[in-house]
Image (cartoon, rainbow, N blue to C red; front, side, top):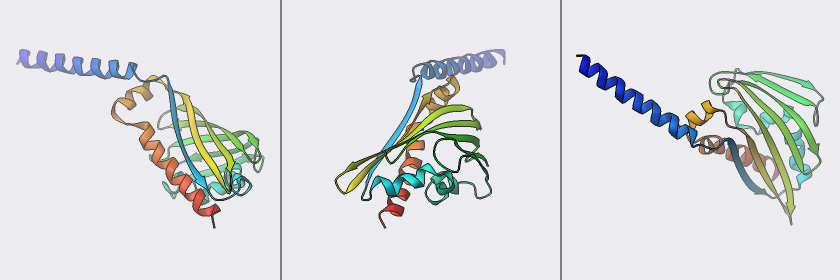
Length: 178
């Protein structure tokens, strides 16, 4: 019996060591980026991102918890606008604040997650006119805490978050190409 327990303990220790070693090899930063071309001028897209009150019409995160509590503070839109949320396990809780809004080309947002895992990132939306279209890029980047690296051993965060970004960009495209 003691031999079986010892073997199980050794296998568990090796498994944990492998996970920790794999986590240590993950990058120190998290970076997720998606882009799309929208047949609309940046001036039509910019207000939908620059005003957190408009995010309900396009953000994929707004539909993940219908009972999510939302609060808005600071300025109505643009630099200083703040949006906080508290929801179920699908959305957790967090806060966004627009740090820079250079119309109609770029919006920079401080993005803080509190639950289910703490994280502090920057989100950037860049709108570059290209003929009769606008190239819209949604980028999120920030430090990858060790717990994030452990999660990345099991979950491809770029794929998981990227699917949401793609849905949000498709929603913005649908709204602004009308």
